[in-house]
Structures are given as structure tokens and as C-alpha cells.
Amino acid sequence: MGKMKNPNTCRWIMFAIIIIGFVISGISALLWGVEPIPPMFIAGAIMAFGGIAFGIITVRCPACKSRLNLRGLPTAYCPHCGAKIE
Ligand SMILES: [Zn+2]
Image (cartoon, rainbow, N blue to C red; front, side, top):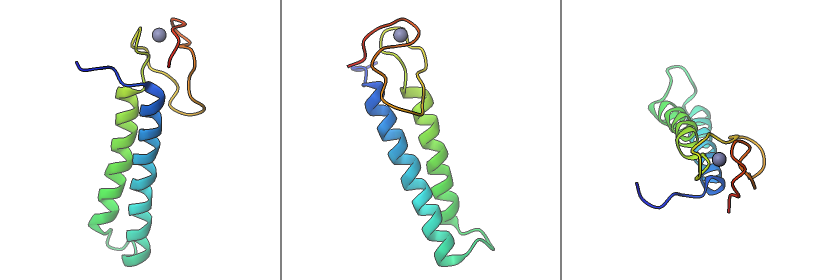
């Protein structure tokens, strides 16, 4: 394991991946419709799910490794062990 990333930063990266995935899906649906489902739509959906998976894996307390809330505001203190999150 390398240097532990800040979970608040990871949460923003997760949101960015999900939003980009939705934008890709949305644009492809507008361009080509959803019948049949365009490959780019599927790629965008996979990207959005990948973002969620990224969040579940990375948005964790660096001290106790508990999963932190994926939604909402940046976490200042871990609700599980009370460690300060920079
Ligand atoms: Zn903790």
C-alpha cells in the first residue's frame, strides 16, 4: 500500500467520475437514442458504477479503515474512531 489518500479528496474524485459517466451516457442517448442502446451509453453507465466502486474502496478513514459517508459534506472527524481527517 502506498500513501493513504485523503478520503475527502477521493469523495470528490468519485463524484467527478460518476458525473462524467452520466454526461457520457446522456450525450450518447441524445445523439443516438436508446434503441438500440449505444455502446457509449453503456460505457458511461459502467464508468458511473466504477465511480461508486471507487468511492466504496477509497472513501475510508485512514486510521481505522471504516467506510465513511459517500454523500454529503467532507468528513472532518471519523464517526467510528474519532480520528481527524485532514
Ligand atoms: Zn476511523
